[in-house]
Image 1 (cartoon, one colour):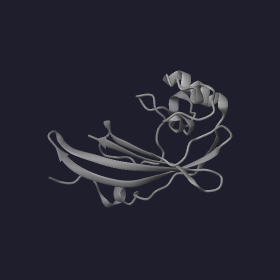
Image 2 (spheres, helix red, strand yellow):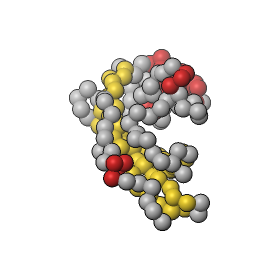
Image 3 (cartoon, one colour):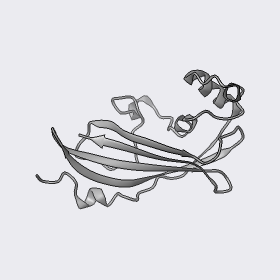
Image 4 (cartoon, rainbow, N blue to C red):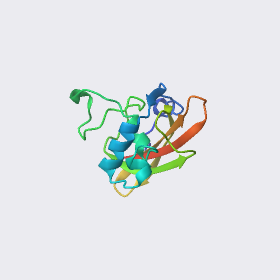
Length: 151
């Protein structure tokens, strides 16, 4: 079977986003804790961010016409793939220290891998995006690896 990947697509491996810097506030921590049902006092008081708080912190705020059909911001880091139906392939998060109000955090995303496998219904493209989140001293706070599958 012929590969759906080519050298031009594979050349995108290593591509990085511009760093995005955001301030963590007590109010945002509290809102996230309430919205996600985190009932521990440290989260409800906004003293520490609950797990997964960082995900929404770095989402782009865009106009409606800049959203994909499933309601997510179009990911400008990714090249145009020949397969388009996306599925979750995995998420691995390493927390190196708690996120607290007053933290200025900077996230940089890297397209770290693109590969292909053959499934029952045909070719599948896998891609991996690493996101490193550091504080203003350059210390790693969170490292996240997301794997997506396209068919």
